[in-house]
Image (cartoon, rainbow, N blue to C red; front, side):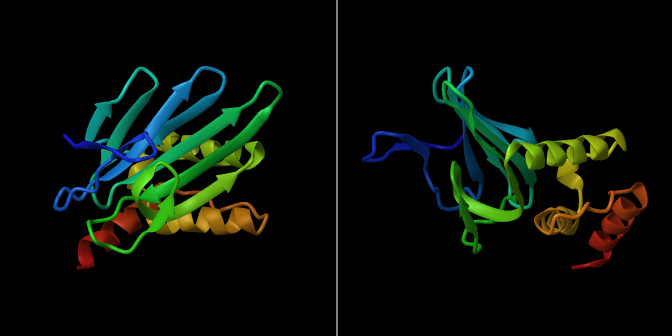
Length: 172
């Protein structure tokens, strides 16, 4: 399992261990205040820090969805979903809060209406019997771009999924 290192800030964060090559995501849950959770993805390791926090880790190439939500006494202050591809150690990456060292961000959506649309898209893919973590990264980029432009994305179909799987087999 991954090691946890204490930084000067006093927060426990996953160490960047050479050779480990995993992407670590810190998840927090405080009832009716903060919720960081994984919506889909194949967790390689998990470390419980305390009753409210844990660190989950993903292998290079794995795709996962990180849902973040926070509220104050009056209303929701953040609602966000990010679909991220975990990268190999040393690969160039984008930074993202709670994700160490970072990853390739395939899709990001903020605000309750957009987040709900993404969660519905994920649910539609699952209803086809497809693991959303196995969906083509190009499709997640497409969904992100269409939503950014205010347009509806194409529906992911079994035929598109089969074509993606075949393309992966023939590409080195």
